[in-house]
Structures are given as structure tokens and as C-alpha cells.
Amino acid sequence: MWHILGAGSLGTLWATRLARAGVPVQLLLRDSARLHSYQQAGGLTLIEQGQAQHYPIAAQTVADTQPIQRLLLACKAYDAAPAVAQLAHRLAPGADILLLQNGLGSQDEVARAAPQARCIFASSTEGAFRQADFQVVFAGHGHTWLGDPQNMQPPAWLADLRQAGIAHDWSLDILSRLWRKLALNCAINPLTVLHDCRNGELREHPTQLACLSSELVELLQHCGHSHAAEGLHDDVLRVIQATALNYSSMHQDVRQGRRTEIAYLLGYACQAAQRHRLPLPHLYALHTQLLAHLDSRGLPSH
Picture (cartoon, rainbow, N blue to C red):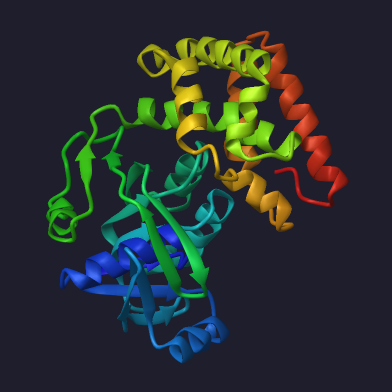
């Protein structure tokens, strides 16, 4: 049984594909009001290539008592550890928690909140967005890398992902993948917020992008992830080109008055730089500007 917490775009995308493949799935919803809304909707809807398919997946609240052996955590980074702490009494000994959070930092918080569980880190390039509550549009087939820095042995349940057609690989160096993605997010997302623009419009700020990329390369190298630093600037430009018409997730959060994941992206990078006593003026200045911007809009800075 897969328990899935987080009925956002990725959580819904995983839940519907697993259910479609005949894998047992149970959604975890935060309270009885949310469960009632879900029951009114009658399940989850996956829209793929314009075709809508409905899946009446079973659901329960986090307060339920059913033991959890395998938990897919698809909530925001700042909600991950509190959610797991709430579920800790339900986790079976040796349970697996699959973490789909952006950035870095939340993985360690979850591991501390559930020391009895095995934490599997994930990095995904799949594209999906919610069209309405409990409805997800599969916007772009991507790939998911999974790994466990503490235990290189892949879990047997990867067979479920193959059965569900979820393209994936078991990575022996998942931290490098997560650092690479963090660096890309730090170079792109904050600038889209401060310039209030789509990703593609960042091409009008080449010097800023080059300076940030250079400092992020230095950071990755000092953190022991030289491989993740290779060709970073070119990759930043490639992502900007490939997603030119998109608004970054951080831009969307700010525009909609939602809390951002800054603490797990730029905040985490700056803390790591300070630990290594690295003088990265552009990165620190960007963090300061972004914090001030969030503050001016009444949004939390953590």
C-alpha cells in the first residue's frame, strides 16, 4: 500500500498513475473537512493529452490509525517535517518515506522527525499543474531520480514505478543531483521574482546570470559536488530557453500570496556558503533583496 500525503500536482500525478497500474494507493488528507471535499469530488482526475480519466482512490485523514509502510511525501518543503511528525506514530518499523520536496534541508528535518524510517530522496523533472482541486494536468513527461545516501541498495518497490510507467533511475549520488537542481533554482527563481518576469525574460540579464552561476559553481565545489558544478551556466541558460514562457514556481507563489520555499533553496545555499566561509557577494545580495521583497508583500521569509 502506498500512502500519499500532498494532493498537489506531483502527489496527484503519482497517485493516479500508481492506481491506474493496479497498485494499492491511499490518500492522506489533513482533516475531515478536506476529506469531505475529496469525497464530494469522488476521487482524483488525471488529464493527459486532453483526455480526462477519473480515479476513485481511497482516502483518509492523517488522524487515521492504519499503519504506514510506504509514504510518498509530496507536500511543500516547509510542511514535510511537521507532516511526518504528525504521522510518526503510524509509521511501521522500517517504513520507507519517499521525499519529493524542492531544495535541500527538509530531507534532514524529516529524517530527524522519523528516525525509525528509511528516507529516499527524489529529484523529478516531470511537469504537472493543478487545473482545479483534485484535478491534475500531466504537462510534460520527465524523469525521476531516487536515492538514499545512507543505503545504496535500491528498494524492491521500484517495480511498482515500472508497472505505473513512472520513468525513473536509482541514483548512487542523489545528493549531487539535488545540489545541481538547487543551484539551477537559485540562479533562476529568485530573479524571476525580483524582475517580476517569465523565465525567458531573464535572458535580458546576462551579467547577473553569469555572476550567480559562477558563485554557485564555487559553492558546489566547496560542498564536495564538483560533478554537479560542471557546465552549470550553460544549463541555466538551457533551462531558461526551454521554459521561456513559464513563470517559476517561486514567482507563482509570490504572485498568489503564498509562502515560498526560499529557506530550502537560496537560504540553504547561503547557509552552506557561510559554513564554508565563502565570500559570494552576488548570492548573499540576492538573498537579502528577496527577503526584503517578501517582507514588503507581507510574506514569511523562512
